[in-house]
Image (cartoon, rainbow, N blue to C red; front, side):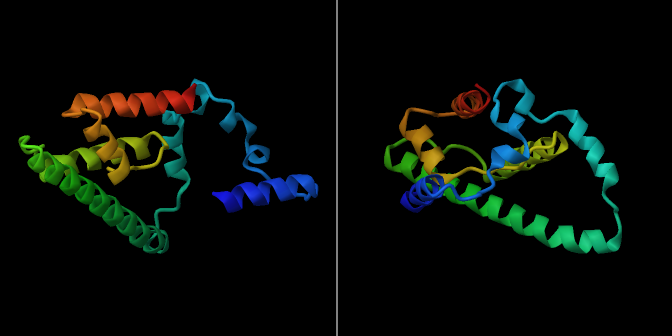
Length: 151
């Protein structure tokens, strides 16, 4: 992080011609509901040439990203389950249900033009240590994060 701050300060001080993300699409950083994905992103799928060559490029990347997402989610689940058992609390649920929810959420996100996600260990631990015990706490966390992005 220090290197990013230093590089930014040097490029600004030396007035270097550095392209920024805002130059590509400034509306992305405007905030508000306009930055959220829409169903219009689904139409872009028809522009993709669904040939064997395309699938040979997309499939290995999709599987790799899915496996990383599953592993990170299962690790987060294990850490929280161990913490819950150490605190004398009951199990937090089935990993099969967890992964089914992850898959459904990622498919819905992709259909809206968004990016998939997974259960990250630091955020999951923060939620659990802050008193989160169920789906409502996860939904509240997601809504507050979304609010920070949109607003």
